[in-house]
Image 1: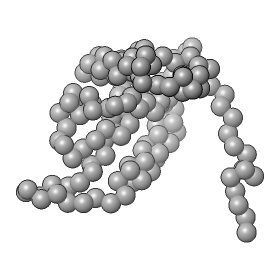
Image 2: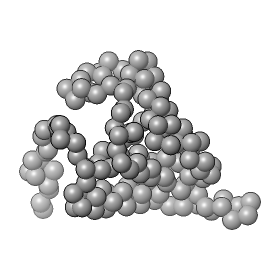
Image 3: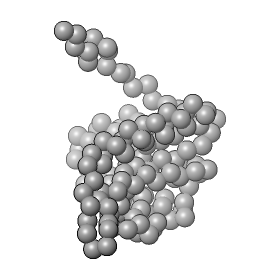
Length: 143
């Protein structure tokens, strides 16, 4: 299954890098050395696929769910924090479009892929980019 997910993700990512991404986006990604190859999807011991459930189903009726993206985003943040606290490395990967995950994992129409998280112990040669964070003064407003 990991190989199938990798192959499908790489197919979408190849289209992104070769046709969909504007030059500005490609230039922004250049310092990270990323491309459409995603071997980590197969190398990671675990792949966690997070789905959001956009609406419930009761018989033939659709039941509206509120704040789906916000709720799933917060829950995913807790999951990532717990994985890191356990000493595992993760990567939030969002190949776009992600519909292939619904097909491969045979999910119902009311579920949509939200995030793909490879998880495991970091490889010895693993490098984390030094991305500067905004200073507290730049984001905090005290009144």
